[in-house]
Image 1 (cartoon, rainbow, N blue to C red):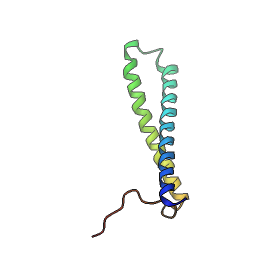
Image 2 (image 1 turned 180 degrees about the horizontal axis):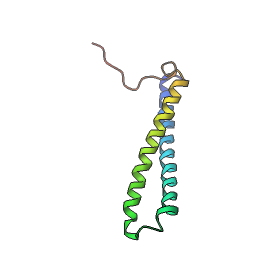
Image 3 (image 1 turned 90 degrees about the vertical axis):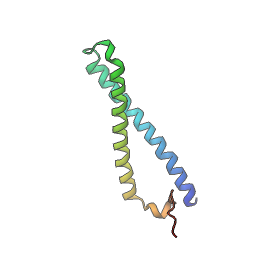
Image 4 (image 1 turned 30 degrees about the horizontal axis):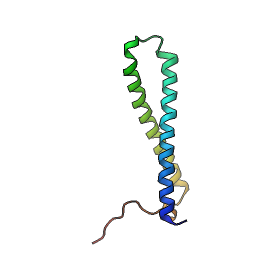
Length: 91
């Protein structure tokens, strides 16, 4: 495989991993809400709690994704296996 194929496969895998991380963190936060907060809060506050859970899941998945990406970049020589996505134009 060449660098462009490696880059495309990496982008697809990283996107899938980010979506899975978001779903996992959403379900974990939702389970925590259902067990700890749901019995104590009024029923009209459910939509606000779900919105906050969704935002928290996005933030947590973004932070975990960044940490995993930094770890990956330390382990793998990125310039050797991947093509840059955006090329800088030299004049």
